[in-house]
Image (cartoon, rainbow, N blue to C red; front, side, top):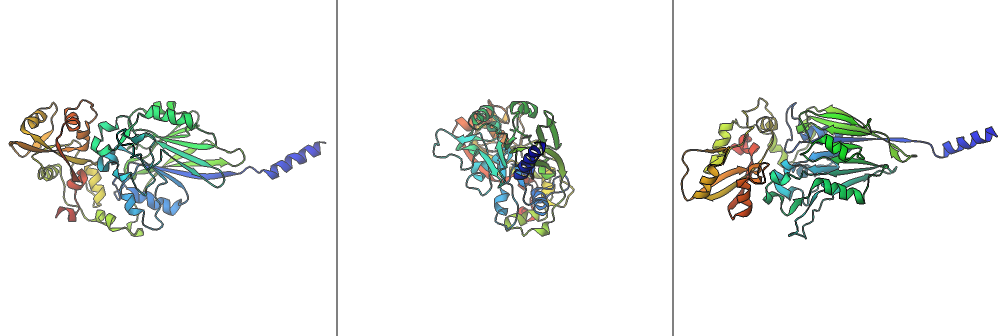
Length: 411
């Protein structure tokens, strides 16, 4: 009878052969507005170029996104991310307009319509799910930080609100628990400890920490969870290798590595006009020149920290990023003289002017971060902008565009 039992085992093995399917997941982040840079900031063209040439069938998750991708999405054959989770930088620059009615696959779990705008539910899903023909499924959830409204002005967020991240995640998982047959990825908010989030979300196979200048892969719980950090400005991608068992219907523990990027070959792309202008030579820039340019639009400027001298690269975006590591939008506010004196005398004031400011109406320029409160709920400037009927105008430029313009922009 032993030979009969052995035959039965053999027949079962032949009827349902174990088969592992390899799946590659790429993760990028922090490339907002950086199209083509230098070795320290290769930009999103490098990521697109690499994946088009080496792994066009893979899945790609990006943290941050860029409004430029709508411009590139019309080019035949260009690979773009399969899921994009917004970050505060993009919201400060463009508001929620670049999320709505976009061809880019945005997703965010804890963004919802304000109660006073019930008809304005986001037209992007709270999570993304991919399913392959062999049954493998990958689910991606992304979160914005509770403190996002302190860095993104209300006018940029409306008509949406950012709901608390932890309750949003818990409520979602109550109705959609993590299934062992689904590979689950969580994009962490920009505030809080990634290690604490790993403990809070133990069933997620991969958690993605905010992009950083120090990309890394950390194995948690004996390799059953990976905590990964992509490199800023496209300097690195994270490659996650997955194996799906078609018989047991589950994934093996993932493995990941940091992959460094090289500069893209621009000639390989048939870039549209909206992108070509970014490759033009740049005008000489400096913090002093930026201040002078801003003062052309206002009587006083709350001048930001972190603006350095011009870079040494001939590539426009490289020079822009070297001088302005994080871009920002600008708000012009018209104040009465008494309000101006109150704002002028705030502690740690950073106002710059061309001389004495006088008159009944004073125009001042604020970066979006300052307008949002710069981390303080009780910021005098934030409170006045929210509660009072002050004349407010969003300017048609960002810090990078003014600090290091292309030659055509500087004319």
